[in-house]
Amino acid sequence: QVQLVESGGGLAQPGGSLRLSCAASKSIFSIYVMGWYRQAPGKQRELVATVTSGGTTYYAEPVKGRFTISRDNAKNTMYLQMSSLKPEDTAVYYCAADSVALTPNSDYWGQGTQVTVSS
Image (cartoon, rainbow, N blue to C red; front, side, top):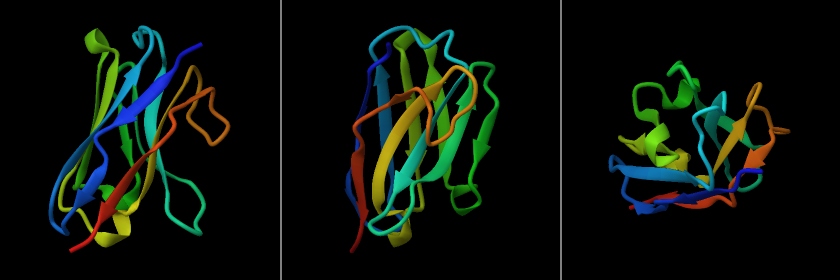
């Protein structure tokens, strides 16, 4: 079992930046894929970005060019650098991990961290 704990959420102004962290309770070296989902009020959970153990990344269209996902296996931590934030980025952000593929039914989830973008 792997426990995931997110941090770094909060309030940001439009155009601002935040960095989310996802700390794992054990080594993530062998975890194939990790990523971030988000869920806004009244909306379904949506995939934001993923990164594989080999460093391959994927970004959802709404965040391409603004968000950067990375993982530091030595620190057992994954990051999401969010820049040029927009009000529509407001959501609870969840980190997730899986040995095969990242889906809403993936193996491991964090508890979520709130990101609010507002002036």
